[in-house]
Image (cartoon, rainbow, N blue to C red; front, side, top):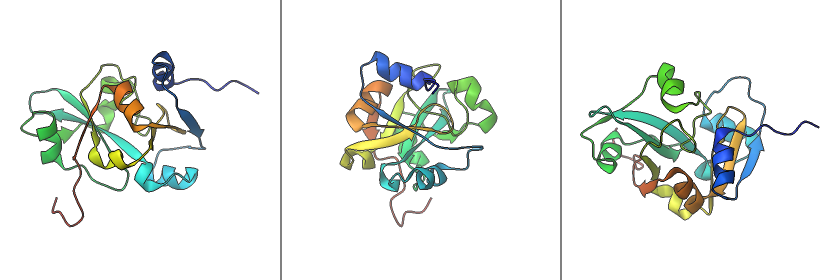
Length: 164
């Protein structure tokens, strides 16, 4: 049987001696994080999506939020010291991060962009994030994820009942 090819994210975790598990699944085309969690059986509350945004200053930022939640752009901007942040265009994902839509992870991007993980992750022992390509998820401890992506934790999602 052929050895599984490592993604850049996996190589970075290996270099940092971070323990993680990979979960491979069949993925012809990326739909969304909920679809991926349904296929893999991963709990929604442990499954996180990676969003890349550009600030008014022109800087790029990575926000990692639960798959069922939406990022609160005001809270996200405040977390990184920007007046406002907006999603980058899907066509620019590879150029900016080195990853593709659905395979984007804060670990091992082309550059080390400031990364903020939503505070809801603090109640989880482990979280699931993209493994660096469609069809690969990585499960790892929250503290290890933050260490690997040099991230911090802040409340950056809309709470139930909040207006967008």
